[in-house]
Image (tube, rainbow, N blue to C red; front, side, top):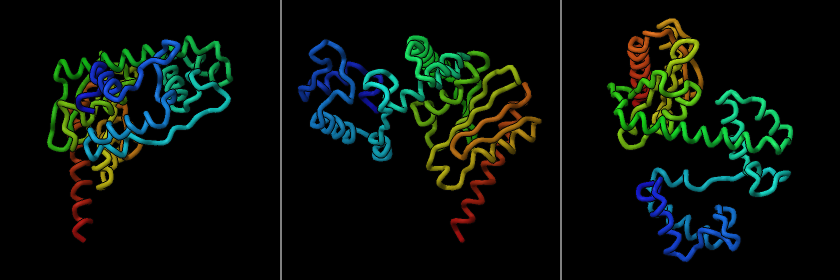
Length: 256
């Protein structure tokens, strides 16, 4: 959110403006669930008033708690639990994830290290793409090639976080390449507006990958592929052709 995201001072100023303490009586920083309903409502109203109209539905959502774990254990919030497991899997530490799923809380320290590394790597990857102006545009898509600089297990997350950010076109799907042991890993993300208009990235990835001797698939809004090294340009040509075809079919359907 402009003016608040990644700006600690602005967030602290927002809390101070309404007399909301950042830390509790014990000196520890408070989280959202530590605030009373009135303070939550004040902050929610402030965020909604500063958000772009299209971003407002994403600000407030459902939170699922796992009651067997205490509130600040890192496992009570189902989304945080999933993030921990995700970071374990992406950094080849399945053993720690398995221990967590079995209720072994002694695995938390290892899981937290994985999550911290995950966040650092994502932040570094975003900086890499932005600082080196790696985003390239075509008529129907935008793309970047991370080479070996971004792990193939996280390049899709990076692509998703870049989509719609400064320096990218919010109206185009984004395609990312990264080197992997099996060839070139391709990850693609699309604006939900395009998906609602008929774009299906799974078909784009499947069709384009097949044309260069690779395999692809996924979901309409997020998909991927693995293709032979050196076939990136041909893959982009094929992906654009499929996106153009889908766009024209959607347009024809809208005129019927």
